[in-house]
Image 1 (cartoon, rainbow, N blue to C red):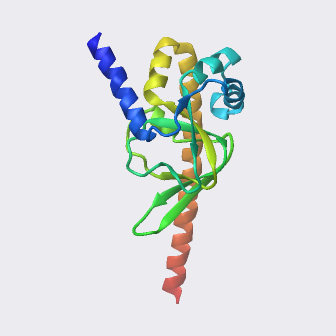
Image 2 (cartoon, rainbow, N blue to C red):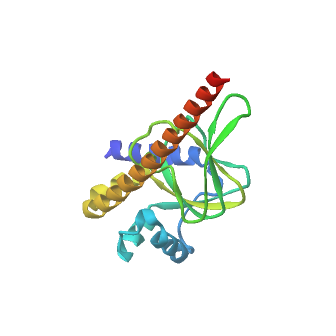
Length: 192
């Protein structure tokens, strides 16, 4: 029993540190709106209304100010996020002040999904570009949920695999185009 309390206490401490213990709250009075938002999210579209309500019980909401980091490159990945309102930039931080924007995300889009699979460090940073409300689903909470609800868990993991595969294909296409552009530039430079 002591080990279970220690695990729960450790998770609570980690979540408090990660979210600076500022505006984090378990859903209460906003439950209906949050459930509607979860229902509309492609990540959860295969779930029934009752399954969505169960997911809402392990979801947290937080507000971010303009230019506030949601997470930074190198931080341990602990949660996936769904944008309720606002906009988020995902950037790869380079040397000095140079950031390469990878994507801009809007309402009802997800980010950080790989955190649901493991705790590898974040490979990019996410920054709110205007005041934003996000939902977080923490990996530990989801794992506990999946252990209690394996059928629902398989739907979630299947969707995660589909989304990850889709994004990987897009990234591969971008890399191929960039390689071709580089090859053309090198050929042009050699011709000059």
